[in-house]
Amino acid sequence: MEALSLIILAIAGVGVLLVGAVAGLVVTRRRKPGPLPDTHTDVIVPTDPDAPPVEVSSPPATVETVPELEPEPAPVLDKPESTASRLVRLRQRLAGSQGGLGRGLLALLSRERLDEETWESIEDVLIGADVGVAPTQELVDRLRTRMRVEGGTAAEARTVLREELVNLVDPGEGLDRRLKVSGDDGRPGVVLVVGVNGAGKTTTVGKIARILVAEDRSVVLGAADTFRAAAVEQLATWGERVGVDVVRGPEGTDPASVAFDSVRQGVETGADTVIVDTAGRLQNKQGLMDELGKVKRVIEKQAPVTEVLLVLDATTGQNGMIQARVFSDVVDVTGIVLTKLDGSAKGGIVVAVQRELGVPVKLVGLGEGADDLAPFDAGAFVDALLG
Image 1: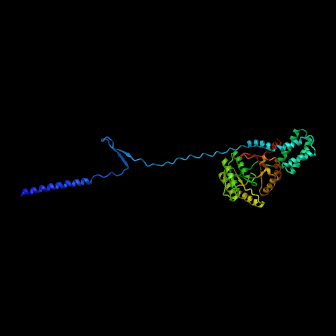
Image 2: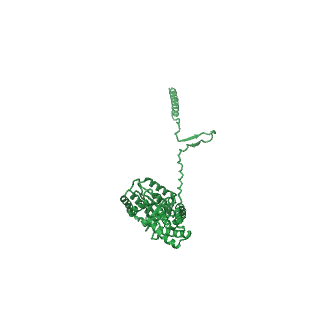
Image 3: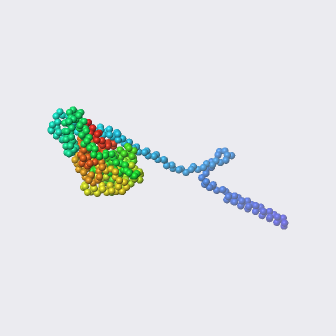
């Protein structure tokens, strides 16, 4: 019996061992490792089985690089001519265009006999050159007197004529031809430029800016001719060429507002001079007076107007004189700019306009070039007339 019990226990133990072995196989299979987690790292297995694996990191994400923009080149600014250079060309240009007047007078004065017919011819030449009736008569009277005493040779006639023409052009009655472009108490000088459209007013503003830049002055331009978009764009171009700021507003803006902003910028930036271009409409005297008067009043809230320049077309002759009278009645004109003088043989308007307004010609325009504007010099002008 005991033997039978031992046999049963042995069989049971073997069964337990078999069941445990089977369970172990099942557990082992369930614990078989799954795929490795994605660590973004690849493993290269070397051909040598004893060598350790080599890890290769994933390439970094591609970063787009923005190419650096090349800086724009600084604009190349014009270098305006000096005043001395302009005066040389003044003589050359005037000698070519105005010499006919002087040569005609010299030919008449050099005649052996100066009779009444000759003097009448001299008067006709002077009046035809827009000198004006009253100045012509005064000049002829002085020439008659001096030629009786001093005249004789052609050289003597030329000397007398030159002296009398200089006296006529520059009578020495307090005519100050200097441009007043400087202010007081640290404020800029303010130049107001007036004149009818077509006389070259906006171009003159740009050319004056070039003269001042050549003298190392800082300038601000005011485009207050707001009713002509072309004038505003033209002035902006002049400013860009010499590196000068131009204050402008939308088309149709109140001119006084643009003028005010221009002077304010000049004050804030410490500019030496502010030049304001104004509208040149001449529908009626009252409208012109109201507009220009308002512009001047608004400007002078910040700085006094130091110069009022009237631009006249030298080729218009007596029509130019009518314009001059209207503007002189509206604003206190302090100087005259004669444009297109090179294309006219009527240089006598220099005499007539000074006599009419009592203010000096300060600048003359001699052509279409950017630097064809020069300070007026009476002696150089007369020498050019005489050739």
